[in-house]
Image (cartoon, rainbow, N blue to C red; front, side, top):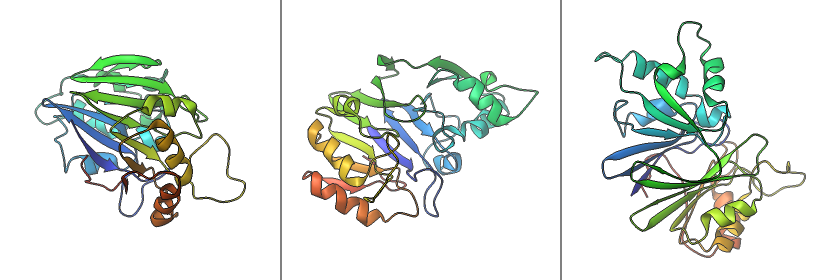
Length: 245
């Protein structure tokens, strides 16, 4: 299993990165985890628009799903003809949310995608075993545990402190964990994690490696890493576009 960071900027695209998007590959199968704003362009450096087999959307905030609108156009109006429909796994109401964002009266995202409503639990997507669990965020949000051939990557999506994240990531080889906030007074509750909190979750879950992501452009990446290093003593790195795990 190989995971490529397409975009890792938190809340909005930064000068050097699109918003959240990750490409998981195994046995020739390619699956996107989120497709936030700015990510569709960056994706084309790593895979053709006709080479994606499935999409998993953690939640329906723009920085995790908005480029699905452009992707629908690319698949429906491809010069070789409409591309095959692929499954899109997302929270309840995903198709309706994307149709509103697209704003078209003449077409629907359902012309390009088959939508599957996520619920907590385990499912098979291509060669991957995916376990989805609810995270601590203002809208319905799923974290994912992605396993293949004895290896596991856990993905926090967006979350505040979460016992479910610790369970979902337990023993994972890699935890790809958001670190949107840096330490400070009066941080909003139940929204995002600091670097230190990401490290705490990784340590409690006993993961083999922690990769910090969803890094908001106006925050210091070095500070996020330094905070996480206080609470997590294992291998630690910062997500960056093009990084492969």
